[in-house]
Amino acid sequence: MDDLIKQAAGDLAAACNVVALTGAGISTESGIPPFRGKGGLWEKFDPMEIAHIDAFMKDPARVWNLLVKEMKAIVDTARPNDGHKGLAKLEQMGKLKTVITQNIDGLHQAAGNTDVIEFHGNFAWQRCMDCSQKYETRQVDISQIPPRCRCGGILRPDAVFFGEMIPQDAMWRSKQAASDCDLMLVVGTSAVVQPAALMPLFAKETGAKIIEINPEETPLTVEVSDYLIKGRAGEVMNQILQELKPAI
Ligand code: NAD
Ligand code: ZN
Image (cartoon, rainbow, N blue to C red):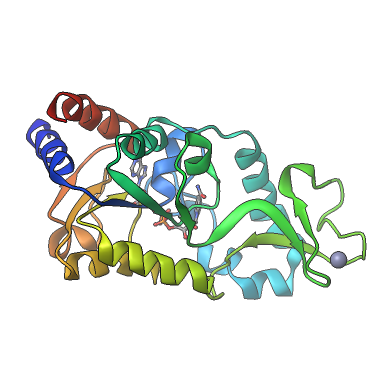
């Protein structure tokens, strides 16, 4: 592990255009449970069932009660951890240009990253299903479920459910950032949700180095990643930054 930390610091020191692809794992140290992996929401519910747009359309109250209410309570109070802060420091050092995140929790922006592509939208806003009026999630009154718009329409997260399209702009910009980078950090994603998991392939195709940070192997580990640093995002980022400082 120590050797891999040194290698990552060396690779980052040599890189000019770093992009990070992040997933739910980077936010677990902020108290937000992932969908997969140990302690994931997946162990409690079938994600494809409850986080699917069909489930929401069929029974919005059920999805609000089982998923959205819980996410709201957690995301309203979550703070960035050392994983997010480490990526913000890499941007301050002029290394990291863009974060492509599958997360909807807004923690990369809270940590200070300025170019964050939210591949699956974000949870900061709820949107009326009838008139599209948006409401800040923090201010939505959930004493009645599902919460409703002034017009009477049902509110839904302004994020992407399974079964929905990726916002076109996020898709296009992510592909571009992945193809342009010379090093991609893949942090805390199980790399099974498509098309987000294609981004490391686009990066690899154009010659970028791929470094994974995750306590567990993923489908990328053997075929796509140059190496996997097995560990928690916050701890690994701190160690890399410690090594990197004297190197640049
Ligand atoms: P995932 O839940 O499928 O996988 C989480 C991954 O993170 C696993 O590979 C796990 O081994 C790893 N992990 C766990 N703890 C870690 C840590 N401390 N450091 C580094 N890695 C760690 O996540 P996904 O690939 O992002 O896919 C899930 C989908 O669910 C995404 O599309 C996302 O939009 C959504 N989601 C978002 C949040 C959030 O916004 N924080 C939370 C849950 C789910
Ligand atoms: Zn409305």
